[in-house]
Image (cartoon, rainbow, N blue to C red; front, side, top):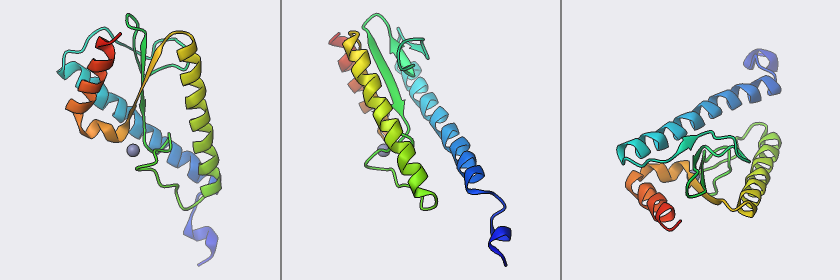
Length: 140
Ligand SMILES: [Zn+2]
């Protein structure tokens, strides 16, 4: 068997394929959070409002922006393992995402917003996430 028949995708095609798979994962993470908000009757939020950094959710009245971070894309130290193939590509991508995350946080805070980041793995414990969020919103 030649290397070509083992994998019909080029490294770039494989990366693009993985990116599609992983980003779908992140959409479902946002939906998990959305359901938590609804179940707990948390109101006053909007999705994908057009403010700097495009937070996943924002509570405009208490100027609080919420980002739901997929453990894979945002390089969670607890859960994220760099894929074995193409690791240089992924490490660069994760580093870029981390830098963008901290720039967004800095800019929003400068504009008077509070920034809440919720990791994908935190959503396993829904009640804890809601307690954390309510504490932050109530202290606004
Ligand atoms: Zn994680």
